[in-house]
Length: 315
Image (tube, rainbow, N blue to C red; front, side, top):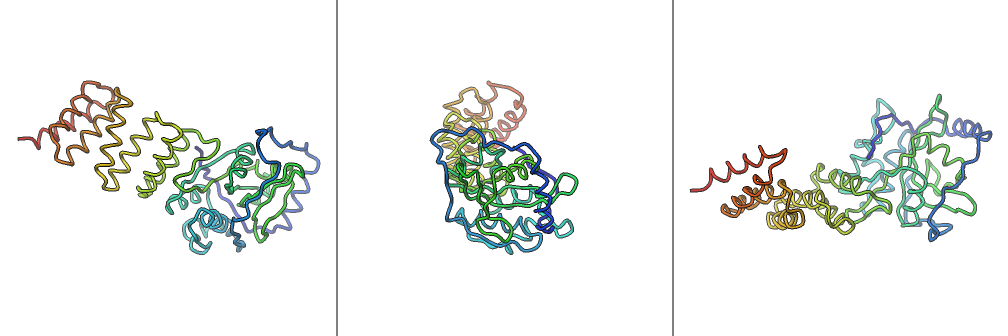
């Protein structure tokens, strides 16, 4: 999963931007990508709120729209200090991702029109980063894609001061491509993107864990297991999130199931031993860590430390 580190400004004159876009007229027209046959020819999300953008504030405005749509009512002003850097007059992609996680939502980055159309059809708005200028005179701008019409070749956006802005797919694709098709989904922890990969989704859930939203991370890992039931990473993350939230029974259950489904995983046995010890079940903990030591591997030193900890508490 990629997170950009470039600076994005949202306050340069849109009159200038419109003039620069006219320079696209001589370029080869971009075709809409081949999409699944069952995808609606047109789809629009009517429930996405709109917040007009103040100068340089497209980051807070678009993120407020996405968070409010996800069920967390919030204003751009409340997000300003979290995503906007006054000295740079812009918002970084990594700040947008970080703020999403701090509010207990999954920040999942997508890339490209193929994914965008399918997410919109699944009922999810997409925050996109566009360059409305040119490579040598960039006009960086965040907007929220809320719909499309394949027949008319149009995309609908909440953008700047305009609610439901209609933009031709040709122009939209050109301006979006300049950010390498950076797009962001703001999701509840029980939602999975249409084209999610296991690694990228679990990385997004890990972001919730790092933001100390452990209960939301638990839901995220449980959701991941509905699509990837054999994922050891998801089960380990589930156990760790339960443990961090203070739910030792939940952690024990997650780690025990990890050992049952992945009997050659030393870390699963080690973590199970640790949780059992925390519950005062020293003999069971000893049995679990001994199995981890038998399995060996690159974390053998950690298993031995766990063994020493258990033995130090035994009579």
